[in-house]
Length: 137
Image 1 (cartoon, rainbow, N blue to C red):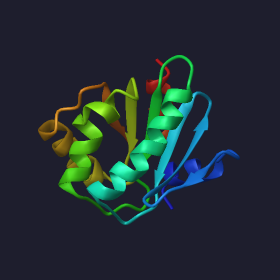
Image 2: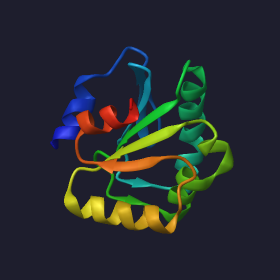
Image 3: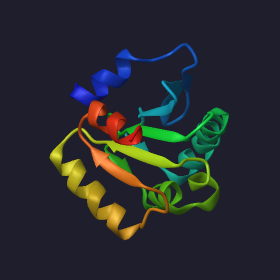
């Protein structure tokens, strides 16, 4: 288990919600998402995105999103576009930090972030601590 994934699993709050592709909860003013599906489709993203947006809108102050890609091995193009450029979804957060578990995922993530230009500040990290520090800047 990677450092980032282990960190996220150890810090779950009581308000954790299990969705079709992820677990989500709020902690320290950050909506946290741990991807649990191996493949994320656009349909899953849209269904789960509504619950994530609800949690983000409940926050007071900056709406911060931390996504740990955990065990996900593939994200379909429609899902990536939804997360990076769908006006309804991107309106729900102010910043997003993405945690990837290995260098290959980081390269692929950077490539797709370049293609699917993100509307909001977004960065990729391989450490939850660094991701949280950046979100709270």
